[in-house]
Amino acid sequence: MCGRFSQHQTRSEYLEALAPDIPFNGALDPVPIDRYNVAPGTRVLLLNQRDDQLYLDPVRWGYQPHWAKEAHRPPVINARVETAAESRMFKPLWQHGRALVMADGWFEWKKDAEDAKRKQPYFIYHQHRTPLFFAAIGKFHPDAPTPPDDDGFVIVTAASDAGLLDIHDRRPLALTPDAARAWLDPALSPQEAGTLAAEGAVPVDQFSWHPVDKAVGNPHHEGPALLEPIDNPLV
Image 1 (spheres, rainbow, N blue to C red):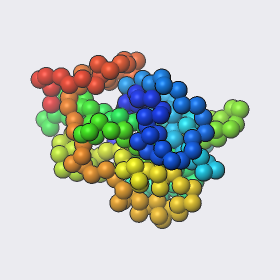
Image 2: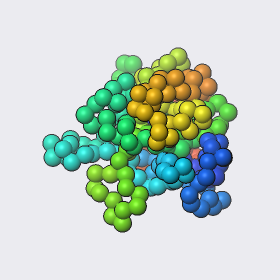
Image 3: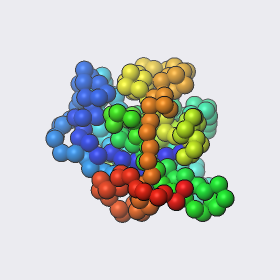
Image 4: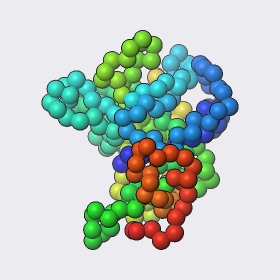
């Protein structure tokens, strides 16, 4: 799963890594985003493509359609790539709401095999420290003066593999830049999106990770110190 991530570079650094040739509709100031502990329920800059241009729109991380709210089901923050395209909740988003979450890495909590309450957070990132682009799907109305209360997005997740399994059995679906650009294309069919999701992920062997301070568990904590490795992890 993905329950926390870091998004701290400048907008232009992410866009340069993704698609410097696609026009961006908006201002690209040199100020870093500086969010080191992005938590569910907050608004996140979501990258999407409309009219052959890229947009960054603040959208709430978490999706709760009206029928789920009426059934007292809490908002969801992730969608499994294996089932999202056909599920009741996510099929409309898969067809018409594909987007990207720009990130520098994400956090997972490794559980002690003998005591599930004993957990250690790890920060996972590209071994070359290059930006990551998580596949996302959502419902959002960027031009509405007041967005509907069921607007929101989820991060698509995939099964972990190799060494990442030691940390957690799920991971955000981080796409290569080529696959990420294709994911944004509104002309991409739902079937093509499924193939892209299966074939366009960044290989697991390109990730690195290290244990970090448990302070990241509190969404009120921020700053680059949250990404620093620690000695003597609990797990």
